[in-house]
Image (tube, rainbow, N blue to C red; front, side, top):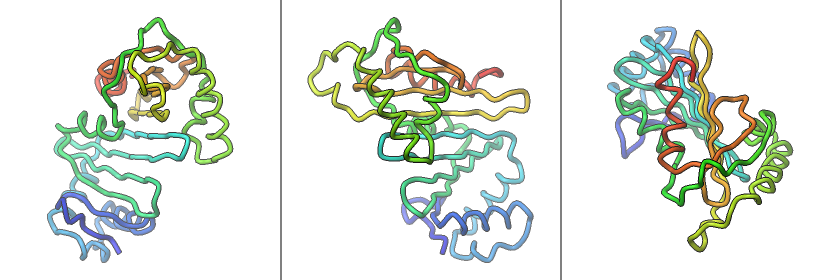
Length: 224
């Protein structure tokens, strides 16, 4: 059964099938029997956002243990977020579209850490980068092993313990009718590297602020 979030009137959780059915009913303008367990204002906002959707952003967050995926449907007033993580239940939430940058940065969990000079680079391939987010664990484990090994060229961190931070990758795609915009970033040995665009072959060192800007850039430009 779909369950309202007790901490927020603008969020709910359910299985993939339950969320699929709710969104299908609301998109078609049909009565949604599963919505009876949810706040009426939440259901109404979801329905209005689906009807007024004018764009889509997809975010994936991965590490060697797994991945989460987030699809955000954009309208002028609100953004509908559907998040799939490591459990069977999914989260459905509505955010003001004006708060979209903050929502994306929270999903990416960009952390304060030491900067990595832009002249420090790690070479990869588009396929290797894509495989970090693969649902097939064989592919993702192999890709993480290769990328982690390539990260051995990074200089030691100045502060103790930073090098031991678990690696993490974030990929954002802004869907557009005239061509998608994309950005990706990696946290390797506790510092950030960015690869803007899905065909990048070089990951370049940056600061946490630089990582945040790179991740949000596809929202601000037509080409991404």
